[in-house]
Length: 337
View 1: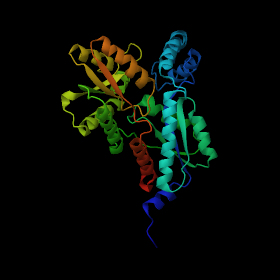
View 2: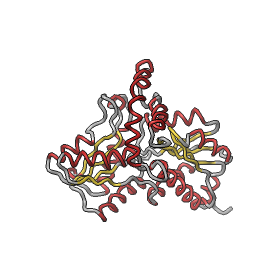
View 3: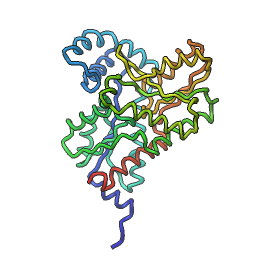
View 4: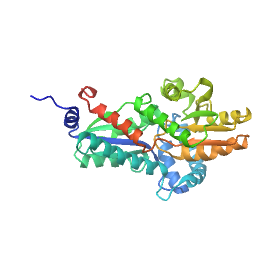
């Protein structure tokens, strides 16, 4: 009997399979009303906020949801596009191109649905879409390269709770060669059309230090991604730095803080800084508003000349290729035996 080709083997393994592509989420509009609904869902997640409900609930509903939505709406309005939320626009494009790439590799279409942990399209909607497509085995690819209980862990818990059929979770991919190569390619491409900055800051979304101290692997995975990227770019130790952004509340978060480090660099006479955010698969509020606008303004105010943000991988072909590799690897019999 002729030996099955890799494509035929994968195509056979893909029978009844589908992919749930998961991202964090976004409000429906840059308005206080939409932000209040989105933040209420997000900040009610016990995987995100670890405080006891008896302490957190009055603070959330009595203070935060009364004040923060208007400020957050203003930030979203700075980056909102005619097509809608950048995160949703880029995630939909990524999903479409990944579906096409998988179909090309398999020689047949593989059902794929995009679901957001918070907001819409909701995870429940994506699971229903896959069910209607006849999927009996769901492979979940969460677009969080580095694992944290507050992101990937929360998504895993939600999907497990909602799904009514077999579910497999593709592991975090912070060290995947294709992912790191795509990051390096995006930096090289940026540097080929821009003057290279004096420093490269590799900035990740922060988490409370307490979470890391309790064993969350996020910080160590961020550090490894940063080191692998710097190595691919052949950067010396004094040419790049690992930093953390998006601190919320007064508790101590992972350090060094991105904004503080930018101010320190400006005070030291550094005039141009490049920033890349490898933990964000698609551009969003934290990259386009926090880094590219707000932190750039802060850097200039501190004496720096220019902060250049290097875009997220979004639907770049090398990013799509890396994610397709992850799905194809999950289709291997050994991946789910």
